[in-house]
Length: 101
Figure (cartoon, rainbow, N blue to C red):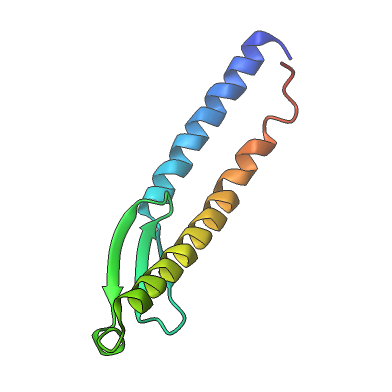
């Protein structure tokens, strides 16, 4: 591949990457603790969006129990967000296989 073709391919990939990043910013992922007493919402780009607490389920919890539920919900949200990112960005990596550096 000549330099002109490689540059063109890189610019196309950059454009597609930007589009995908914008799409990820708009997606909202919800992670939950086991009994859904805590829900944490992130964007597909892993930016914080919102926390939702089920008041009836949270009231009887002590601090360490609540902290565990928050951690579990955050971990669930991050895992889902990473999966979504891999799904959306994965095809972009495939475009580099034919490139010679």
